[in-house]
Amino acid sequence: MTKRYWYVILTYIIMQFSGIVFAPLLFATLPISEFQAVIYWTIFSFAAGLVVILLIMKPYMKVPATRDAAKPGAIVLWSIVGVFMAYFAQYIASIIEIQILGIQPGSANTEMIIDITRAAPIFMVIPAIIAPIVEEVIFRKIIFGSFYKKMNFFLAALLSALIFGIIHGEPEHILIYGSMGFVFAYLYVKTKRILVPIIVHMTLNSISVLVQFSLSPEDIEKMQKQLEQMQMILIGG
Image (cartoon, rainbow, N blue to C red; front, side):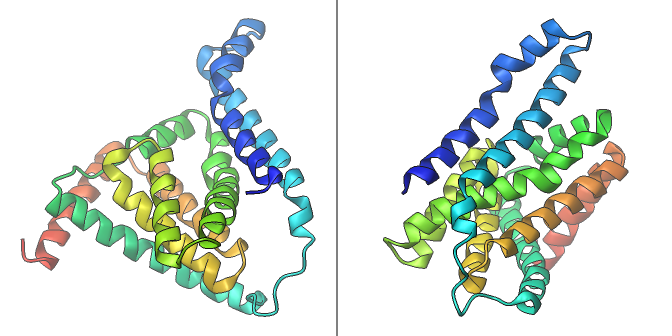
């Protein structure tokens, strides 16, 4: 990896953990609640992190795309197809987790994001826009791209997808996160445009946040039970 890539990864790490130090300082300095301090600093750190990462990656953005890179029409097409591919991969992974591995459905990470978004709707900008851009630059362009130069697609996608899953802090759902990462890597290689997995990632996150934001916890639990029943019917459980 180049020095610029390591700078991007370092920026990502600082962005993720800076709140441990600066959120309490914000709370102690300003007349706001501890919860507000965490929210405000998180939004600031992610926005600042995105700006810094884009500035670091600016020289790579100026490099002309390869001749076989997807054109605008193909970008739109693969973005749409990619959303369905990602949902299908997520569905298969969830069936394996629930029916074979016995893992309960639901994501603590997603629930936390929804709870925060309900309390502070402006927080929605992070999972819907900022996080997908940052994560695709790091996990697909940098990490997967570095692996792909040294090994075949399957191994490179598998390793980067596993790292993508681990970083989200829910090892019990690593299969779901990993399957999504695998689809994003495929879209990146197929189109040779990092923009495509970014768009797909943004779409998935936005739909997930908006749907769950508009539903009550009871509605979400009811939908999960209906999904489990449907899965049992489809696989003959």
